[in-house]
Length: 377
Image (cartoon, rainbow, N blue to C red; front, side):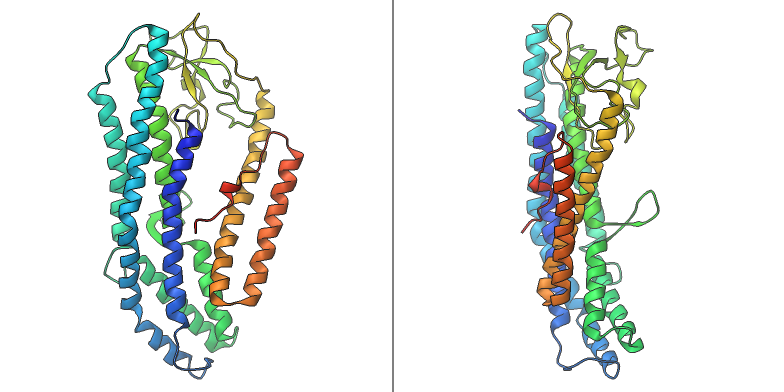
C-alpha cells in the first residue's frame, strides 16, 4: 500500500540524485582549483593564478554539463516511478476500499489518467526548464557551475591580495561558502533570496509527491460520491490540522448541497493553501468514510499539545538539515585535505547529533530517523 511515508522515501531517491550531482560538480571545481603549476601562491603571483584558473572555465563548464547529462536519465526514471507508477497504485489502493464501502465499481476516468500525466509533465517541465537554463547552458556567464567557479576564484584572489587570509584559507573559505549556499538557480524564494538548485529540486519533487498522493485519492472519492473522510491523527500537528485530526470531516465546503452538518469541513481549515490541511508537507491521510461502515480508531490528541509538539518536531527537522549540510562540508574539507576544516565540521556534526539525541530523549513522540541525517554517496 502506498502511504505518505513511502512516497517521501521515493521522493528522497530523486533528491538524493541531485545531492550527488551537486557534490560531483563541487568535486570537479575542487580538483581543477588544486591543479597549479605556480608553486606557492601569495599576493605576488595570485593574479597569475587567477588567470590560470579562469582559463579553465570552459573546461569546467563542459565537464559539469557531462555530469548533469549523465544523471538526467536516472532522475527522469525516478520521477516516473514516483508519480506515474505510484499514482496508478494509489488509485488501485483507494478503489479497493471504496468498492467495499459502496458495493459498486466506478471505472477510472480519463480525468484521473490526465491528472497523473499532468503532474508528471509539470515536474519534467519544471526540471527541464530550470536545469537546462542553469546547469546545461553552454554560455559560461549563465551556467551555474561557471558562476560559482568564477566567484570562488575572484573571492580568493581579492582576499589573498589584501592579506586577510592565506591563499589556501581564501580558496577553502570560498568553496565552503558556496557548498553551504548550493549551486544557484534562476529562481528566488518568497523572501527574495536566490534558491539553490538542490532546494528547488526538493520543492518540486516533494510537492509532486504530495499532490499525487492526496489529489488522486480525493478525486476517486469524488468519483464514488464519497463526501466524508476520516482524518488520520499524529502526536505532532500543524495548527490547521490539529482541531480536526482523528475526526470525520467533510470533503466539501459548507455551501455544497451534500455538506453534512454533523461534521466540520476541511475547507474551514485552509484546505488548498500551502500551510493548511493537506498543504505542503502535511502527512495526514484522508480515509474514505461511510456511516455505519467505518470505525474511528484514530488516537485522540489535545489540539494545543499537538501544535506544541509540531513546533518541537520542526526543531528536529532543523537539526537533521544541519547534520546533512555539515556532512557535505566535511566531504569537501576531506577533499581539500583541510585539517582545520575537517575538525570544525566534525564538531558541528557531533554537536547537532547530540541536540537530536537529547530532543528525542526528552520527547517520547519523536523518534530518530537516521535516513534524514544521511547524505547520498
